[in-house]
Length: 124
Image (cartoon, rainbow, N blue to C red; front, side, top):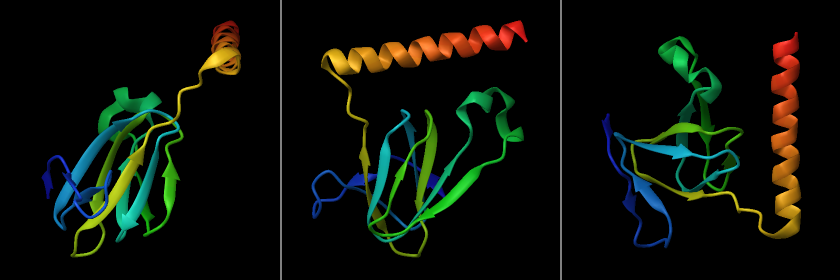
């Protein structure tokens, strides 16, 4: 299998196409979505928090069939390949960034919760 940038699909604006023996790699933020728009995809990723362990961390692999969507639970590198012998097309949707007061409050709450978890983890 070759790893290279997927080609833009001229029939579907915004969609990327992977050939049968091709693997696309994307570094995605938490909340990013991958939508299979044509054919079936094979996704593979590892737990980002354990990336320092390298190949010792098991690879999470899942099938994404045409019309299905997968939302990344955490930041990480995802490999995307076609499951069948023919090419497949997909769209990567980045999470919307929260603007305004609600987004500011939401981000502050997440950062505060992360700080509390870190402090509690060190105290234990």
